[in-house]
Amino acid sequence: MNDAVGQNGGMENLDGRVAVVTGAGSGIGRAISLALAERGCAMALVDVNQAGLDETGALINTHATTHIADVSDRARMSELPDEVVAAHGACNILVNNAGITRDNLAMRMKDEEWDAVIRVNLESTFRLMRAACKPMMKARFGRIVTITSVVGTTGNPGQ
Image (cartoon, rainbow, N blue to C red; front, side):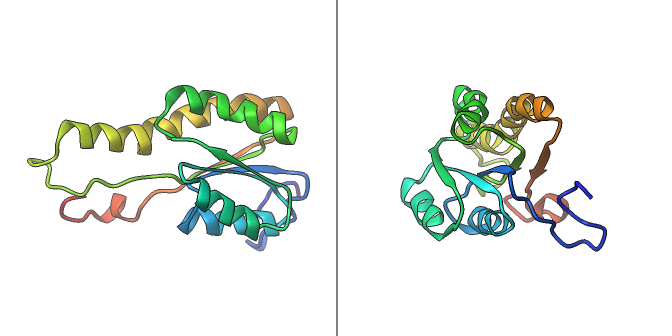
């Protein structure tokens, strides 16, 4: 089976695949990066925090590159997959994990806060996905995973 997830639901070997993970400098992004590396992926770790990227990279036992990037930077998201391909030879898996919250009641939320949430959580996901599709289509293989919060289905006051 060529898929990353086998029939039994377990993860298959991903040797030779290259995974890009945003928000890889800490938390869920770090955990995802470690899990993918453990299964054989070369890793392209993306975050705004160089120290966090360096810590994640040090925990990985496979080829990993770090890419400082603010996902809300449109131009940076457009060029990132090409940068990954130049470093690793491919861009097979994209995990859109980076996200922010600006907890506030709607009537008190400033336009700047709203704009930041939309740029990071929505626009960056689309722009990076769009840019990553080109090398994935060329390789005739690609997987895109987008992480969201459970709050998207249940809601919380101020979120």
